Length: 329
Image (cartoon, rainbow, N blue to C red; front, side):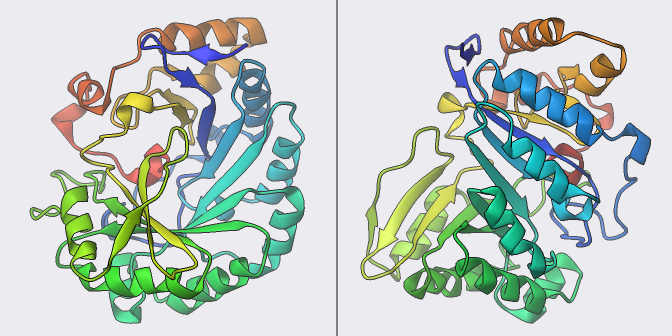
């Protein structure tokens, strides 16, 4: 059995934010003093998450992405990943991290069968890294990046492109792909910065990023995987590749195959929309698996066509934007 939304799009990808806590304070993600973190009792427990995955996997969810906050900030995350990997029909588990984890866990992640790990790294310059993240942890992140390259886990580097902050890092980031088998992904800046407004006034859309790259490199288009959110390219002679994710202009909405769960159990059928269901509350009310699936099917049958439509439907006090850490990346 497969899940489809009201627009005929197959849903087979679940993104789970296991925590909203993070040891970095990236300015585009949350305010400098942090956010009001969810009380631990209000987080979905790992048992609740595993049950949810099991139920959703029974109707076609085969790919998981574990995010945060910083997922490795949550205690016992490795045990959770081990159990999730055993669930029938779960074919791939991917992780997005800020890269500050203890590199001693890389072997464990490899043995679990983690398919890929995305490291958020917005600058290869220590000073700019500090200005963006407000933490002096560049060496640790880069060391973990190098260690991951020696594992059997696919490595991707996510860089949010921000005018006046890290444009000069685009070329050095591409140079990583010259010698490393890595996918560099340049991401349009999004408005989820935990404050009112939409981040930088001077915005770099996908076309501007691509033009900037083409002014220095001769690139070739390579096939995009099914449901890909990135438009992917290669530079001749480079081991790795790069992609551009139109996260704000949202040109990939037409093939969206994903839903997401926030740390407190809110189900979102679109990153730009409101919560449509609270899974944690349903589970704690004693709901059975069949009824949980019925709720899921109902909200998927009411899904917005794209991120722009979902954004128009938002009923948020003062229209202020949430932190990405509280949404789940």
